[in-house]
Length: 207
Image 1 (cartoon, rainbow, N blue to C red):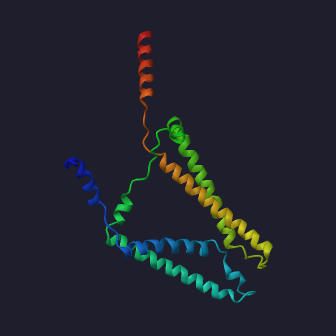
Image 2: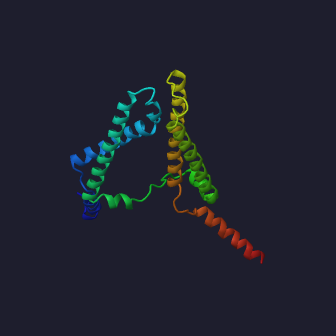
Image 3: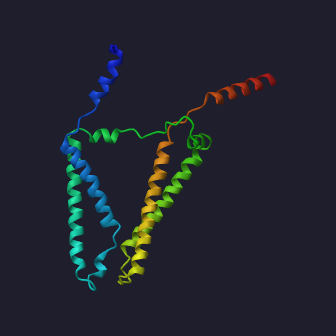
């Protein structure tokens, strides 16, 4: 049989967990799906305003695009309201960042040896990928500004810019996660303490 000490931690954990209703889970999934679809349609699609003169039917797609954006905003507002109503909004803001839990990690060792260079390297990589991603999005948005031709060659060029934007933001997410995971407080190994103690004793003996 379990003792009282063994039962207390599990009871405490269950008390901290707030059960989510089916409506909340449905709205949560719907907000993720709608945001992903809206990002793919609105951000990764070039501005169709330049095609309205040559292709008037594009106006219908633009109206659908605007309706999708409005619906996504409405769903996310409902989701934020449910977070606030269930008391989960403050918990998400106070949530501690994830840290690396590996016993032996090359990234943590590199940060321990060169902490400033580790942080600077990941910040520069994140800035470079962010800059190229934004540049790709600008090229996508103004793709039909100078040339309104729609053929296979032009669509392949557009796909190239879309692919570069996706890859840039994937790399940005990766570098950001690496910096967050391995940016915890530095821990000094016991071997390092022993080495410092031995060196200190040798210095005292020489003196």
